[in-house]
Amino acid sequence: MKIERHSKIVELIGKHDIETQDELAKLLNKCGFNVTQATVSRDIRELKLYKISTSDGKQKYAVLENSENNLSEKYIRVLKDCFVSIDMAQNILVIKTVPGMAMAVAAALDAISFQEIVGSIAGDDTIMCAVRTVDDTILVMEKIRKLVISKE
Image 1: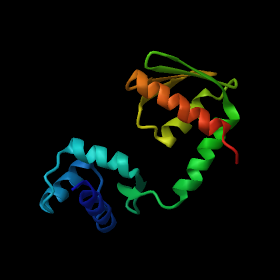
Image 2: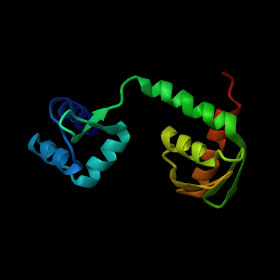
Image 3: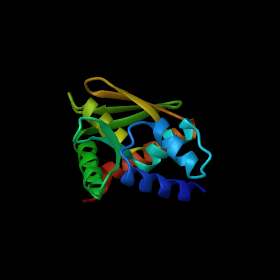
Image 4: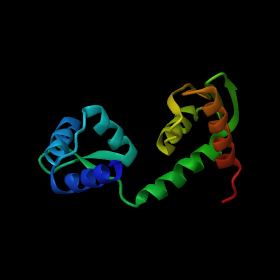
């Protein structure tokens, strides 16, 4: 059902200028998908939809084109170039970066979209990431280490 719903969402945003999650939910319900705004919100996040400006100055949802792979490489490059160390305290990751680069690395982590990370706060050279569970924290640490030490 989820795959069909995601396909319908992509189809709908291709045909209509959809500005809000509520609009999208109403269209999906008209198409026979029984969804709430919360479901639509999750779908938008999973599909990595974003908003673009229309010619009349409004905003609408759009699908990120194939440049996504290019963007991911850039974010991984920022992570590799600025990463210093990583440690954990229960379900909190503490990531050290080169001075002045914590916000860029936090933005890269957000863009890479680790599902286990709930949110991040960045200072000058330190990032604190709230992770769902202690086990997820260990998993994210391993993922980040693999990204940082991976060969080009």
